[in-house]
Image 1: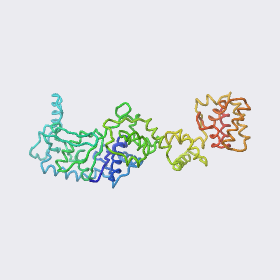
Image 2 (image 1 turned 90 degrees about the vertical axis):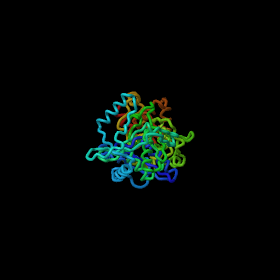
Image 3 (image 1 turned 135 degrees about the vertical axis):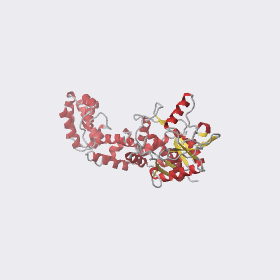
Image 4 (image 1 turned 180 degrees about the vertical axis):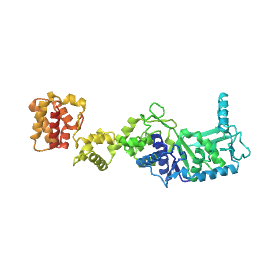
Length: 460
């Protein structure tokens, strides 16, 4: 049987980290087996549907590179199909109309809870004759005895006593399908072979298998993966990573690094941490998925991103940074590639790399308060003026020539490099950190160096 997996989000919010990982696992599993990966939008809840959320979900999948096969399926366009299935189940006696009022069902629940019983429907309307003109819902006729069992590709063998379950609702009063009916029908019609989803759906699976059995259809393979938690072991908060996946893009995370990190959240392949996407497709298997929950670690994500940034094609990276500099109002030059090579090891994200490159091409608008208070003061002004003159008189502009200026300056004025270099660095970059000071001056250029030194002295 060919492998077909699916990702079925509801368009009620952004594509969050946990959902993105679920989509990725489905995508990797299908792609690694020459199968198909399809996307279904579960949009039957008109009150909660949000077109902006749908667009955000699709942008997130595209950014991660999770391409899908065929067209997107929308449940809202399949209502006739669901009504057909519901009608067939009623006609065959595998489902029945339930006329119980909300008041009765609430009272039943309260009574069962008071007796410390598990709340469940008591089957009152089973076998009841049709009652025209009375509102009803439709329930699935569930076996009272025996068990339902399935082999989960992550959790192992699961066996549930049918007495723990009740006759679940498959159609609401208005005739619309419930989640279970729509989902199972779609999975059948889309020939889904393997359902990979969060283990919060584990309790849904026995019910869905009962529905499949009532439809006289085989059930697919299931794999319930543990959820992603924060470092504290609790549900993800926004601070810990419960953000839309597009926020990570805005933070300067590379898509391939995000894919790498998501894949390793709860899945292992020996001790290997860094994967290119083709390698993930080749190696990913559900056998490597842990049963325990995975914890999101932002520092680990930054480390993974830094590894991918370091390995990123320099030409592609140069084009990206060049566009960002132009957008910021600067003009890059022939030194941009060298600047990027210097700053890559000092940067964890694309945004950080851009920020670290920017001062080479755009003068800082202001100086870091702590650095300026320490290195741009009246006591530093005399040496800065002397250094300005030495740079002005320099003919050949090269790294070695600039380095020699610093050496000669220190010897002639009987000072250590630490007496002048920090002031020059703050004047040129706006902060207290940069690559080698001589190379920094060279890459910024003589004319611009003199302008920035002059501005800094005037600010003092």
